[in-house]
Length: 187
Image (cartoon, rainbow, N blue to C red; front, side, top):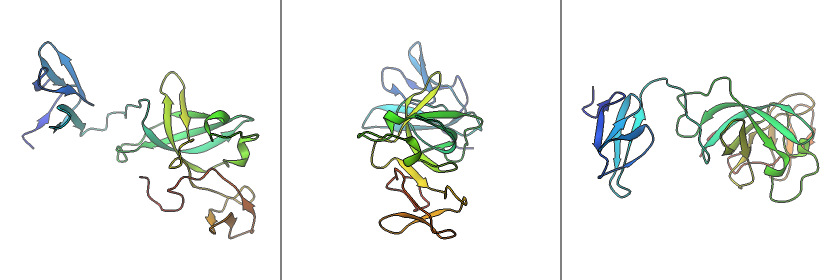
């Protein structure tokens, strides 16, 4: 076991030396671990955090980037089932839904949310409201659809440099695509 392995309540450092980061809290004059894991220190920021080494639920905060699948589309709302948070890919998010309101899709006007998302699409989004219902935004260029499915036959769509095209039925569709679209990677 590594020498920097801690369990909840263990002292990580002095509160006057470090700013508490993820997985830590201050009690009295000490910075303590709030989860089981390995300590990591950032000498530039003078911060300390504990990288979880358990299957504890992922904590979602404003500004976190998450990936999810569209399960339903309403008139002005997309509903996603979240899969994982960037940086915590090995710890999936279970049974958590989030919403993208039509006003959080693009910086310009969008009349119908179905023109930018389709059912089953995989979307990379940023959390803008973590409680009580998780609200997401895809306005930034690097956010949006990373994998799209045909609205007619559910076949994955390919980007031909100009349009999203279905190889099966040749249907052409549009999406609010992430810069990661089709790469198979989430950056």
